[in-house]
Length: 252
Image (cartoon, rainbow, N blue to C red):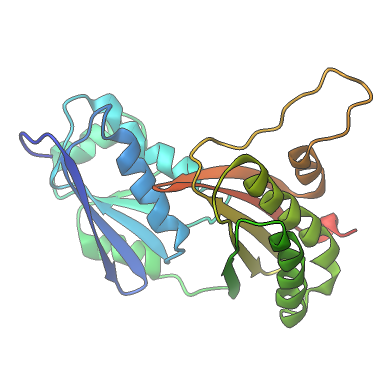
């Protein structure tokens, strides 16, 4: 973690089944979020792991090291991609440990050690994925339902089609209603769970608004929250991803 620079650049390289990020520059309040979002964006591509080499990162205030635990928190429930750090410097590894980073994000002295940590374990299950960019128009709601049925039928998971249709349609409708984005629909299946994710270009997080009226209709996100095992927002460099995880207990 070296000397003086006013900007932060992040180089990315694929190494086997992992992605290695090499940030260069100053980590401070102005570059904290860009680095966090770059790590999250790499994780959203779902490699076996994201490795961050901090050798060329300058950190004037050690509190900024929380960027790594923040990135890890955002991908903890989905897409569950491990994030690990590399630092050859014992001094820098001590700083990471002293600031509590290593409680959540492991740090390795070598790249080879970090690669072994994230790619050494054989995959225990298959993750299926499908993705479609939709138009910013009402017809995309019907297209969403068609794609969900098509993908889950192909994956032999018809029991989750009704719930996934409702969740996906609600998330896409929110994008069309509250942004000017073309939504990107993503569906994943792993073991008995399905994740519906919708990306848009608006960085504002989606949230459930509480209504004081007893007779008020539930909002779309209240319905999503009631129908899924977990849901949340994950920021990325161009906006956000709103996702929901469905399990066997969420069948309709």
